[in-house]
Length: 182
Image 1: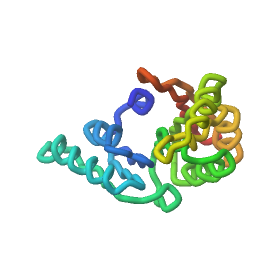
Image 2: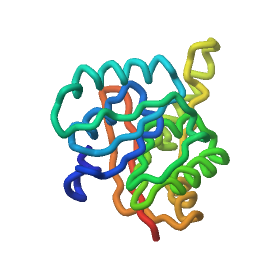
Image 3: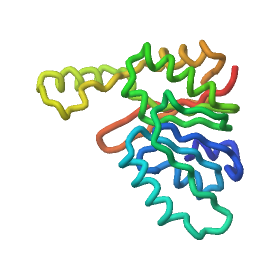
Image 4: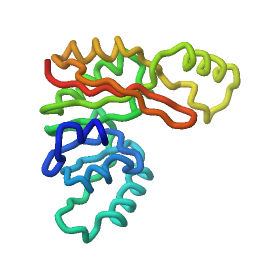
């Protein structure tokens, strides 16, 4: 939210939350006055996000409910002031991530905000250790991306990174970048 609010008020700004999960970003965006289109490939996540949004936003004057939809990233269309895609690129190998970044950038008028699991020694080691323990429910198929590869993919479609940051929790961190047209 801080990166989104750095440019000023969000009232009336259209935002596409690509891969919205349970609405952890979409709902605060709507509370800030943004016009939010949010999608996720998981119907249960979209159902939970819709219910949370109704609980938190319904009846609040001047606020619009986010428009939630079950959709994969490849099917997204429209034009938005800002496109945000947080922690979804982990599901794409770099050659597919390049295409996805190009697609997301084609939907954005002013900026794209992306987060990704950085290709670091620490994450690479954890991934390799995880691969030693077979099991169907593990996330060892997570793809790590170097910041240089993300930047190159953005530059290829005419965008440049304006801001860089880091998001952290107790057990996870990801890189976040904001890109604007070059």
